Length: 279
Image (cartoon, rainbow, N blue to C red; front, side):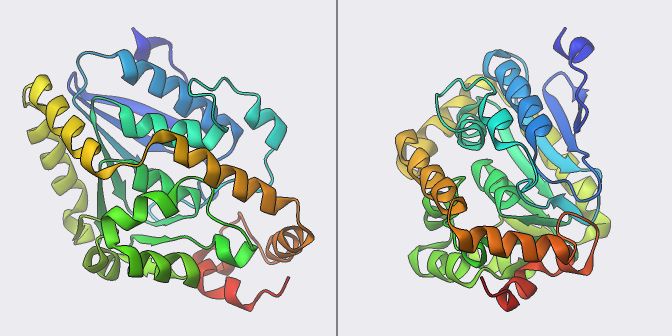
């Protein structure tokens, strides 16, 4: 059995029922998305792509302050890109595209901060529920002088519309749950005291439906709302192209000096403070 042999370090998988799995991110101090986590997500997706029982997968976080902070800017890029890619796309695009295709309903249960690639993971999921008091989403790549590389420019317009997509991507600012819900960035903002119970009840209910009808609903909604997969590598190429520019390196170094990727005031307020960094 997959769950008996799968022993990840940066996430845990719990079978709440045979039809409902919960995946919990746990990569202290702030849940950055690095090589090991991407490797583990790829292995999990390989199982979910062939699994005939699981109907709902909820992705949550062990850290109440950070859902997925962002991509690990200190990671070994070559090692990450050397990981097997079923789609042939760059490592993170491979994950988000495959996530959007699995037969099970994918739910991002966002309690804490989801910025950059963390936001893009949530956008690639079918549904996003957020803690009213704690969920924060944002795409701050513009402050790094880069386009978001994991698909945000392609997925946001279907959710929030053209003008608000411009606002989110050009401002680089944070969007707390109440505003994110108003914009359509998340489906619903639930009071934190009720958050886990709500998500669990919703996932349990949906997991009991017939697998065929779940698959048909997903197929038709995806047909009318999703870009061709071939569009997403263009975003990744633009992002990684930007990383070669000195401005990107300058911003990254300054942020690292201020505590990026640690539980610092900078990470809690990155959507605000990145506006003060001059390349």
